[in-house]
Length: 320
Image 1 (spheres, rainbow, N blue to C red):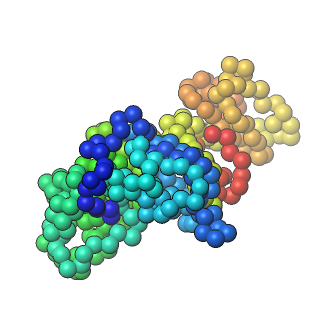
Image 2 (tube, helix red, strand yellow; image 1 turned 90 degrees about the horizontal axis):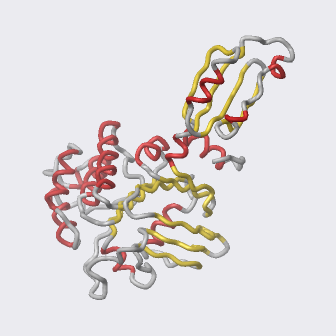
């Protein structure tokens, strides 16, 4: 977690018009290895931005570069209009960071940990942190050294989300948590968004990204492999059906896609009697056309982030 004293040269509030995060050609190299390569990205204020990618894709390097913990090799970066390389403490004044390996003082009790972080941060809010800990069903009387891994994760979440920071960076926040507490963490993320704050949400759990994020970036080998609005992805569907007729040439006898549906249907594929149709946008007009076909066992499902992620991960072309 990030907690710093106030930097005397830092402004009382960040520039009002700058995006939450802006990078242009951002790169980080270790010897001959590019951990980040030509990463250009913008994250708007007040959105929940998902960060995806396999292990080693560059997600943590990207986040630590934004915070000024790592010096970039090339390109530019700003957080709320502040360059993290010029004024890293100024950036961290407005950002709360939950790392994937959060470490807490083991000799303190939970309540003392929350008080410590609330006291040293200019945007600390002990009352809010305590309320979040209560929602996460955390016993704050225990010493950190005697807490389970899941309890320590809850404590770290309460310390970070409990602040009033304008930007929250959450790296695998639901790791080691049971399903009920995971749901409550996602609720907290959405509440933070409704307050007008920005959340960068890094996770390997695709369903969590789909549930809370407005946009998602997928990193692969340090590069931006995909940048997707979740609203557009939710509007895509895959329809699976079986044709009643299985006679030779049945595929050729399937009626052509009507011209008025050309923009709604992105793909039609056959595998014997099995039919697969991918759609974009409103599903209602497509269903009307399907009703005129000789089909059975029709099933419609959201295209989903999984299909896009797998396509990019396996170097396959994907239309988004």
